[in-house]
Length: 143
Ligand SMILES: CC(C)(COP(=O)(O)OP(=O)(O)OC[C@H]1O[C@@H](n2cnc3c(N)ncnc32)[C@H](O)[C@@H]1OP(=O)(O)O)[C@@H](O)C(=O)NCCC(=O)NCCS
Picture 1 (cartoon, rainbow, N blue to C red):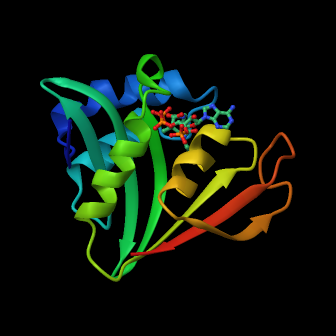
Picture 2: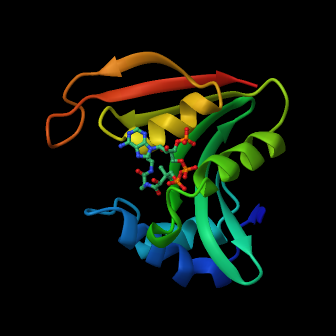
């Protein structure tokens, strides 16, 4: 498995995963397209084996502050350790002394489990942040 920077040729696979894993996907085709083409401070990293893409991570960087905006593993490959391994590879490639923030639904046990495993700590809670009334947990890791 390798984590590499996303290319425009990955668009179809990325959109398929996004639409598979979220009931109401936030990221549209246009948003992914912009992310893959533009040279901005938002980037997408794809996790692949051979020519198959298993997942991706989207981040937003301001110097040494990094926000993870999205992380996903293809539905048929979840709960086999890929999410955790992808996050570990990601944490290896980001610069030393970075501070990484993310927000996660309090009910998203799968995601919370991999964040805790890699030492993210809960720093805040946003009450009723999501449309279904559930809270968002804000987590942080200093590399
Ligand atoms: C979050 C996500 C990337 C994790 O990927 P994954 O490949 O399934 O993750 P892993 O297999 O590495 O780990 C899953 C962990 O959740 C645990 N888990 C699974 N079901 C669980 C549950 N109901 N309660 C608690 N833990 C659970 C597993 O035991 C495993 O933990 P472990 O490594 O300590 O044993 C994946 O579930 C996903 O794409 N979800 C949809 C998108 C999403 O919600 N992204 C997060 C946005 S913040």
